[in-house]
Length: 215
Image (cartoon, rainbow, N blue to C red):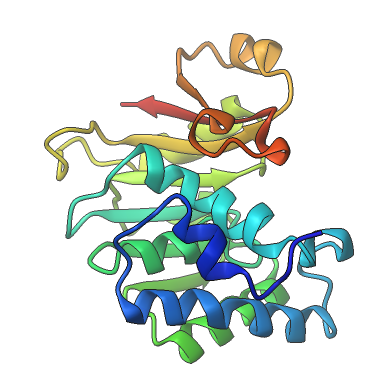
């Protein structure tokens, strides 16, 4: 079981260029979520003790594989308690994130984190993703929300064609687990698949993947 206070040690094993502010923000995450978990079950009881591994580092696998340029606009579909959006917003302070979820009480946690950490590059909206019509984004991100086919149907209308990132086409980047062959086949898409265990050789990530679908 992970020591919840081991944030700096765990994350710094794989990332070495955080500012003092970023490390402070990451350290503050656990007590906020632990407190809110007493009020609403935003994170499963078994996962809260492995918070930095199963939520923060898992979210940051996207940052380990893909770099967002300053000014990039990202929407987090079905963010729940703020994953992967919040860790990514800390990692990329010059990238704008909109976290969307249809369950309002979970967004109360997102609001608390935003205020406590002063994440000015993060906003949130209580809505179904299909109701977002007034904004366009460079990327959509998501973690274990829906099948790939559905995620693409929701995200594609929100993605602008013009690139902000020279090295990376706009698209959908999602975190998935398990055997994905049937899900990918049914989607009709050909995503780039990155095993997270290749990035972070921890047992928890042995069957977890990053899927990237460029437009």
